[in-house]
Image (tube, rainbow, N blue to C red; front, side, top):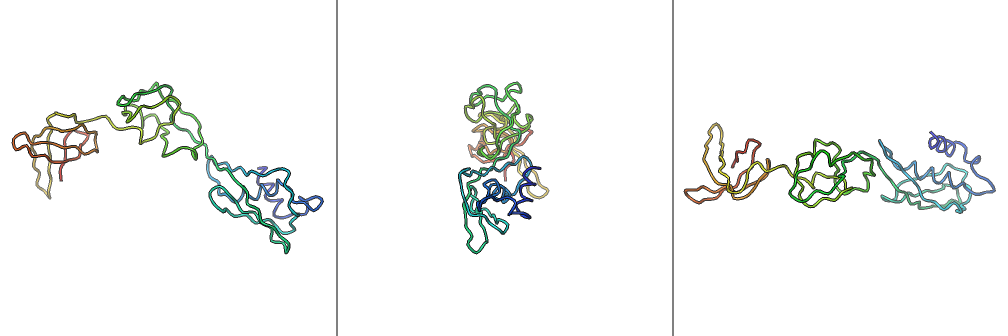
Length: 217
């Protein structure tokens, strides 16, 4: 509400904002922050030295993003000016955070998860925000306490284990062929595994299904 009022005053009554021929710093800050499109949970903070003294602008200030971290604020008066203002954009949101370390290859327990509010703009990758997306999944690497969990940190539990006998399924049109084979490596549903025919020793690659079957092209 306060920010909207500042922007309104900036646009309709610039003379009222200035004293002694100096453009108020808060008016420049409001213009810079208003140039960044907001969204749910998003905050924009412009960084300006309070000692800054720019000539009073009779016309409304113009502002447009220069890059991801800078906004160009300018005055269109005949003797106008241009200023590049650093901005910091943050977006708060709930993410899953580990309360204790989890070793690589171990499942994520429900009691090791908590939802915390973090700045999503400072996280690398996409953070998970629901416990059901992580509980029971396998840590791909050693995970530290306090770190937000991302989809790339986890894998689904293996449905096929190395050395296990599996059913190979091949489909073409209305024809389906099934055969037995031995898995060469572990695989979770959706992952590729190599399967060896125990008689011919021929190896083929297929995709693991939720049922544990391996479908081949």
